[in-house]
Image (cartoon, rainbow, N blue to C red; front, side, top):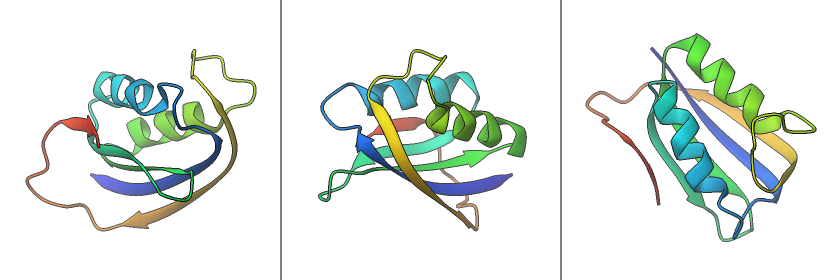
Length: 93
């Protein structure tokens, strides 16, 4: 189990981006959340198997998006952190 905190910038708020992230994360069996940040970015905190996290990250940043991802991601950061025990589900905040 791994956990990544991904922050994406671009045209990612007000376009259904968090709901799309939730759908993809649930399909991949990941748990965590996607949340709008005050500076216009979206933060995704996801944990689960490394291959599932890799798939989510690829879909988040691929250009042009082939996965039906709404909006446009121009930059991103990834922080690998310790997994949190007891997290269930994936929700937008």
